[in-house]
Length: 47
Image (tube, rainbow, N blue to C red):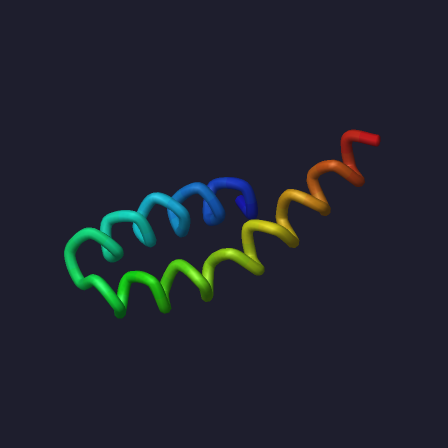
């Protein structure tokens, strides 16, 4: 579920960036920490 949420978040952030400009950038910045955390957790599980 975390991975799916991350993918959706990243996908939506790109769309918002194109459509809303600055608001999209802020939304993307909010998603980045989530993506980084999820990636780290995924790597930990794989290891």
